[in-house]
Length: 237
Image (cartoon, rainbow, N blue to C red; front, side, top):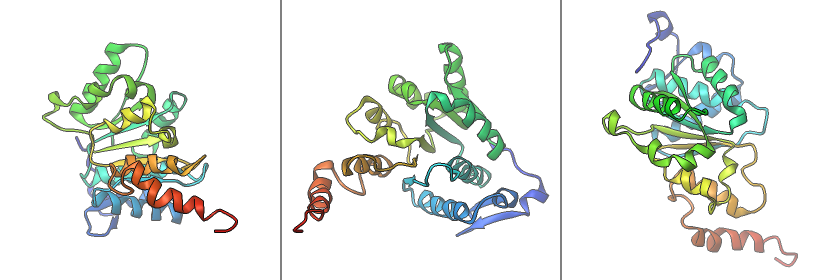
């Protein structure tokens, strides 16, 4: 499942925290300081089995940042199977970026007009590991298939990443409900607009990445956060 680097490459690693996370130094040399800081932050949460929302503004390189982070996880043998959910229009872009920023990980597409081929590619990704790219629409219609690892010795996705994760800001939609049904221990959202209209949208994103452990139920969130925050905006607050 892993494609090891040469001894020379292995000796030139960027190491974090307890030394379990190692990243080839050539990957970090092309990143900005805030992106390296982001990788450190994502690894800290990954190590603690927590989810994350990477909410850098548009154009600041969230894609290369998260794929470099995945390259380190893969090299450190901390991850083998990753599912990335994205818009159809970005499929080719993400496939190209995986090959550029995370070249050691295999990439498969659960996408396309041929049902047979896309299911074969999904099974291959589940069995042999790598990054699997799919769309929000296919997750909605194929949740059980994406969760079926019976052929892969009981494995599951090590991480699920939502590009443009604000698409699940309405927790009542079929898309948002399907995302919550995917089996994984770690979830990551990429979005440049984590809050668009109201605080309940923010709750929906946090609820997804933390599996409900951070802000409680929607009712609890409304009582303890939304009502006081909105009341503070009144002229006589």
